[in-house]
Amino acid sequence: MISVADNLIRELLDSEEFYNRWIEHPTSSIIHHDQECCQHARLWFLSYARSMEGWSCSQFDLKAPVWLSQLFNWGPSIWPISWCQLVKEKTLDCGVFAALAQEILKAQGHQVHSGQCLLVYNDTCTNHWKDLWRTKMPRKEGRRSGDVFHWIGDQVVYHEVCIIELPDGSAKVYDSTFGGWYEPLERIGFGALLAIRSECPRLLRWGDKFLSCGEWVDL
Ligand SMILES: [Zn+2]
Image 1 (tube, protein in one colour):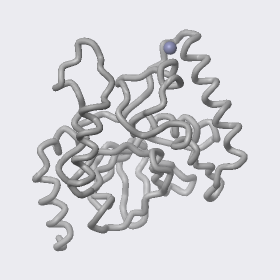
Image 2 (cartoon, protein in one colour):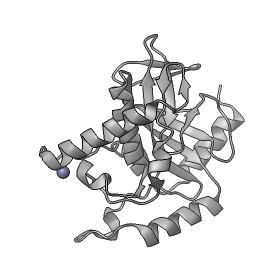
Image 3 (cartoon, helix red, strand yellow):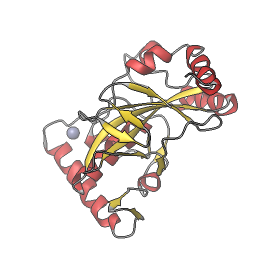
């Protein structure tokens, strides 16, 4: 049975101009030049991550890299980005945060996959972010304005996260940009998760939901 909340969420998503682009957008990954520049940068980053693990909070035996948001600010960054470029940056976008957190959690021995989300915010937030991206997006030669990915809608935004596959076939969803865990609860309002897509090749249980590879699941 479709609830009133389901209808509201569907209406909200259908009203968004970029909805189809969001659900077809590939997840982010970091470029590796296959040369010393990126080999050194990646090794430096992973050994830094290991040195930080001693005092990051752990949940179960997962040591979530909550310190990432102290090392980098969240904001517009060049895209695509390589390892040797990103270690010089102060500001990274959520796709790079998610790709970095995956590397760290994999280095800890966990099964981690890319995840994408659609979240709801109010237009005070979305207008502020649109301004931030318009004014602070690093210039790249030869790029036309149409090449920039429009992740910000009127009330809904696209976001990238990490999906952690636990040995019992369940999932945990980590927001690597803001350092928190998402719960599989239907709710409406500021920051609420509306839909999620997992790239884990196996079917994962997440609360009373099932995350099937590559499929968008509404909450
Ligand atoms: Zn490089």
